[in-house]
Amino acid sequence: MASGSYDGVFVVGCGQTEYTRRTDKAIQRLIWEGIDLALRSANLPWKAVDGFGASCFVLPPDNVTVLAEHFGLTPRWLFQGVYGGASSIIAMLHAARAIQAGDADVVACVAADIFDVAMHNELLDRFNTSMRDYFAPYGFGGANGVFALHTRLYMERFGATREDFGRLCVAQRTNALLNPNALMKKPLTLEEYLSAREIAEPLRLFDCVHPCCGADAVILASEKVAKNLGVPLVSILGGGEQHNYPVEDIYSLRGGWEAMSERMYGQGRCSPSDLQFAQLYDDYPVMEFIQLEGLGVVPRGRTAEFLRSTDVTVHGAFPINTGGGQLSAGQAGASGGMIGVFEAVTQLRGEAGARQVSCDRGVVAGYGLVAYGRGQSSSAAILARAS
Amino acid sequence: MSKRPLPHVNSVTKPYWDGCTRGELVIQLCRNSACGKYVFYPRVCCPHCNGGDLEWEKISGKGVIASYTLVHRPQHEAFYQEAPVCFIAVRLDEGPILYSQLVDRPANVELVEARVEAIFQEVAPGFSLPYFRLSGAAPKGGVGKREP
Picture 1 (cartoon, rainbow over the protein chains, first blue to last red):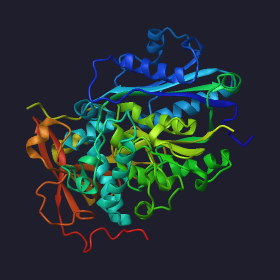
Picture 2 (picture 1 turned 135 degrees about the horizontal axis):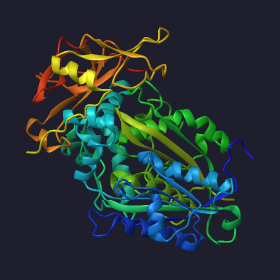
Picture 3 (picture 1 turned 180 degrees about the vertical axis):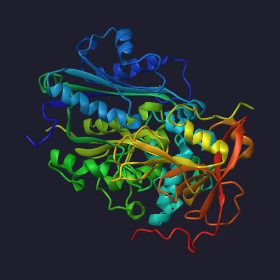
Picture 4 (picture 1 turned 45 degrees about the horizontal axis):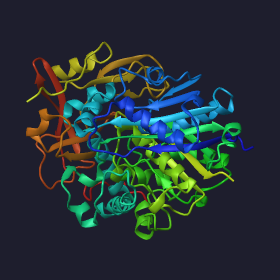
């Protein structure tokens, strides 16, 4: 067993509700639907769940403990995601450790939200004291303004162009059209991307996610439980989280992925060249560039070149965000941190339908919790079809 | 139009906001002699050396624009009339990053690495925020910091 390995744990189910612009459902109902879909795909009953993790921005004043009571669960392990879009991968990794330690046998990890543009802006204005006191009073534009600063610097430092970011957004839209749950149903051309309405220069409309409503969930189980389910099993080959990295340098255009990569690939006894897809945290395309580089898929500063020569649709050599990602499937708040996990597990189970890619191994990354100018939390995991 | 969002002042941050209202940029300096770095935003300890001994010091109010954006869609309706807002990250000459707005933005001027200086504007009775204006031309060719 490799040092720090996640052996003895499998992802045994996954579920995703349709993403919609609005919903009449209560958030608790959306969360229930996400878990219920995932449990069905795992052939497991609700009564088997003895560990529960949830990430949801609109859940307060309730929390994961109150949700467990609402659903009639009696878990012996709970997790609440407080890492923004990095939460769901961290939930999965912490759950796997709990299962390895015998603290739980079956863990349901869910993320969901009921979001729109106004709620998203209001949330970020009071996201934490640093954003409330030093950003909101200046009309900073919410997350769009924060990441416009990083995008401009990436363009200046590495020579990337709007077309380079656009290629990625257009490819993800191609993928989204094959995902029945995705919000966006129309193709996007590079011309439409380039001429879209300005939001926070250099960002335009299609650099920004569309806040929406939805839920994503995965089920993890011990080997003993997993082997008897009769469902495709997915292994966690490696994973990691890193916070506030690099410390003291907001504009290094780096994130925690480069700090965790060596250990993560060591756990999985593999390298970036073994990956067959990437499900990246796409709050903004520039962060996908930085993730590809931090995860060692592309050399630092070279993602624009990579995208000029690589088809990243599901038809291409290295598919990225095979379900459309948040940029084209929608950002259901905290579900933005789980959409990539759901998509990776769906692909590895061979259940992705029209968007299925040929794969037995891929990486998923998370990012979030914007405070004082950047996302504070990074996470990633390498997932593989179990042999 | 709803009121613009304002900072919440507490015992940690009050010296900073009091300085702004007097028209001075006053930030924290770490007293640990092995560290001695400036700290912004106001904190209970130094994030560089983690020590708890910080003093307040009036600084120059000068720096360079680390990055900027023109915000066409502000996050709060209080800013809709002044859009596009030129939101900037200023790297103060003393080291820390401070976020603000550039006022009197000239058209067609390269802003990244341009030198700026603080000015103060009252945004609520008896409460001012620091803003910045250009204090010199940007270096020719803009950012000169391109990595190979």
